[in-house]
Length: 258
Image (cartoon, rainbow, N blue to C red; front, top):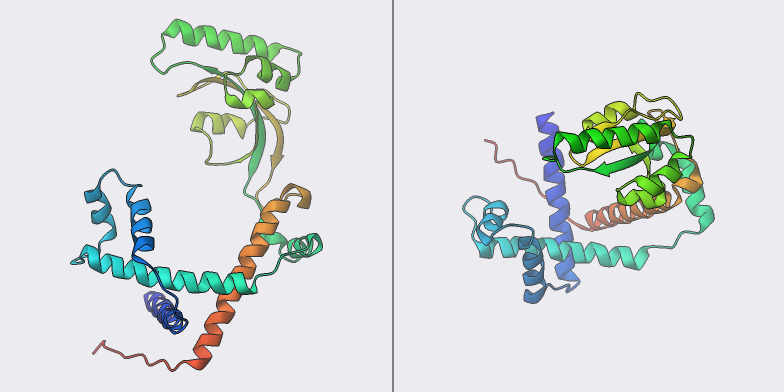
């Protein structure tokens, strides 16, 4: 397995070098200003300049070495981006639907539940009386005959309250654990008991449950399908370009293991 990983890594390095040489041959350039901008954007994600350097510099590397490595990657990315822009095609609605039909398993979903909730915001350090009163209020709402979505619009203090507290389909691992445990145990149209979280107290209602591997209707995931079709096209353009460049190149690999 380790040998296979090494082979794949080596192949990727060869691909990048071939693309880099192709970029130079096509007189593609990266300016100092472009490199500065990328570095500035990257560094902005770190709390300090030191932390940035600690993360991006390889052992024994200087900032100039890093800029050279960055310029190398930017050249390759510019080349492949230009190739994609030159060859990409727009998809018709029929082609997107056909892509969906031919690749349905790409859109299989994890087990998920469609839920709505009502939240009463209470600070974690709020006094016991405030928490108790919140629970009592939600218990009264739970017994109400009024539509849950209308109750959410009226009483929920979560921004989702404006749309009836609807959280859509939520897979496992996305919710605060006590909320998840309750949500996945509920029966259809059942409303939970009040549940405490670090945000306050919730009521959850289950509207629908989807099993592992469920494939949503096309109309529901149309935008996702279109994006997947574009990604597939970009990957194909890239792979075809690699094959084209390799067919014109002479590659020699040396074994330094001895």
